[in-house]
Amino acid sequence: LAKTTQPPSMEAYEGQEVNVSCSHTNIATSEYIYWYRQVPHQGPQFIIQGYKDYVVNEVASLFISADRKLSTLSLPWVSLRDAAVYYCIVTVNYNQGKLIFGQGTKLSIKP
Amino acid sequence: EAAVTQSPRSKVAVTGGKVTLSCHQTNNHDYMYWYRQDTGHGLRLIHYSYVADSTEKGDIPDGYKASRPSQENFSLILELASLSQTAVYFCASSEGDSSGNTLYFGEGSRLIVV
Image (spheres, each protein chain N blue to C red):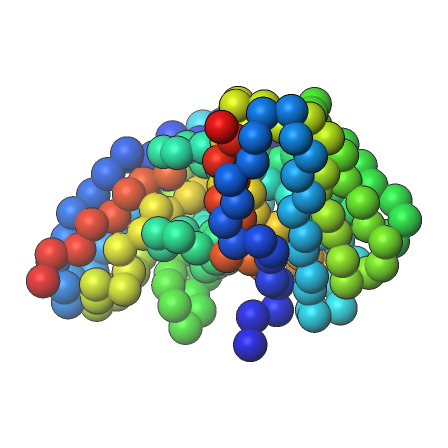
C-alpha cells in the first residue's frame, strides 16, 4: 500500500479557501485516494474519494495530479467548524475498510 | 440519531481487570471495526468482522478479543487490561462492497487503565 505524506499542520482564516496536499509517490494503479477528517472528541468522518482528475461533492473538492502522485483536498469558505485533523488515505477499492490512518494534517481556523 | 453508538463513552479500569467495550450500529452494514487511537496519532485497526459470529484480526490484535453476536453488535474485550491499552477506541461500520472504504465511526470510548 502506498505511503502518504501530508503537512503536519496548517492555519487559515474563516472564509478562506483551504487546500490540503497529500503526496503519494508510490501509488499503485489499483489504489484510490480517500480523505477523512476528525474533529476533537469525535470519530473520523469520510469526506471524499477519487481515482484521477477531479471529484467534487457538497463538502469538498479533490484534485488529483495527472501522474496521481499528488492530491489536493480543497475546502471552500472554511469556518471554525472545519478545524480538524484531515487524513489522506491511499488504498485499494476493495480493502474492506481496513484503513491505515497516518498523523494527518491539523487544520486550525482563525476567526 | 447516531448510527454507530458506543458504550461506555469513558471508563477507568485497573490493570489486570477485564474490560468490555460495546458497539451498536443501525446502518444495516455487514462490516464492523474496532480501531484504537493514541494521543496525537492516527487510528490503528484492532479487529474487524464482516458477518455475525465471525471476527478477523486487524493490524494490532494482541491483547484484544472481539465478539460479533449479531449484525448490529460488535464488542471489544480486554481480558487483562494493561497500562499500554490506555487509548481512545473507535467502532465503525461499512457496507463492505465497492463502498467498503467509507466507514461510519462512533464517537469513541476513552479508556484509562491505572
